[in-house]
Image 1 (cartoon, rainbow, N blue to C red):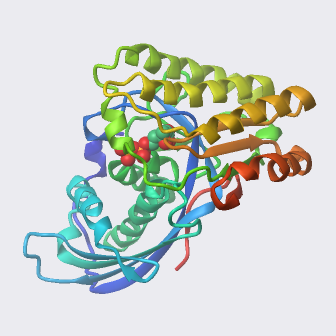
Image 2: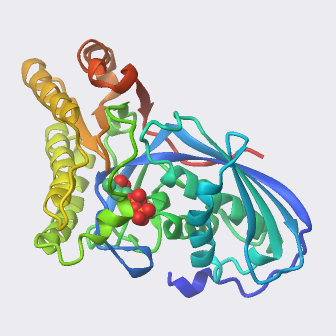
Image 3: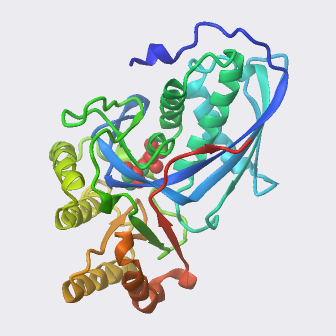
Length: 361
Ligand code: DP6
């Protein structure tokens, strides 16, 4: 697939107005995307678990208008006008316009809400951008007289979501999604996410992710700024090549159900991500003291019990605690008794691997 193949030749139908709603999940990367080339092309491959409960629900209302050469849209979050979201959506519309040439012919109302607390520090860009991309694809599908199949629909939705936020391209489908071309994964692409195409051991089919909300404050450094600091970073090339190696090793781990291998690869990825931040120029730290305390508690508990509990981090202070469903009872007891005290307002979210976005109406 090339970018050109996502440019529609022409539309057959005229659609005056309508409404479409999609819910789309967040995802948590096991091998992390950190560093990008122009046009949202990743410097290295990544793979994520699609989540199940942390979702954005977006209703797109559209009405045809006489185009004045600009984009016309309004955004609402939880029913209230949210003008602070507009610049990011304007940039998204600019990036995708050549692939969705109808954009300036409509006025859009984008009404969005999240199933997770708004100020939880959980990035809503993956779920939010993927939900919006899917709504726009539903409109395009109508304009094309329904003449596109599900595979193309999902591929283009992922392609568009990527142009909104890189990690969003991994939120269209589940349960494991790969983004970024890498020799060990056939069909992998820099342009969109693909479902992980190989055998996965049963233990990874129902993996749990309990998200500990350590710090809900605004991040001092956005992901976009952080990605850019990988340009000229002294360790960048080694890091990018390590990500390819990790993708290859993970293939065997996922197939054989090698939990020890999984734990060390995933924790190393999380700490490497933060090490890249700490060794950028300017350098920065997104972990908080409580992030480190939780990590040490997890290591101690694992050592004492032998249970396959592990953690990963996103670009923030929150800790994602990962474990197989079969160990839920004991591990949740540990989380409640020992880890929740480190969470802001004792807040945490129990999530698990999910299967991607759904059209609601
Ligand atoms: C650390 O996808 O938020 O979560 O493309 O600039 O929107 P932009 O960045 P974003 O970066 C996510 C980085 C990460 C790792 C990952 O999800 O792979």
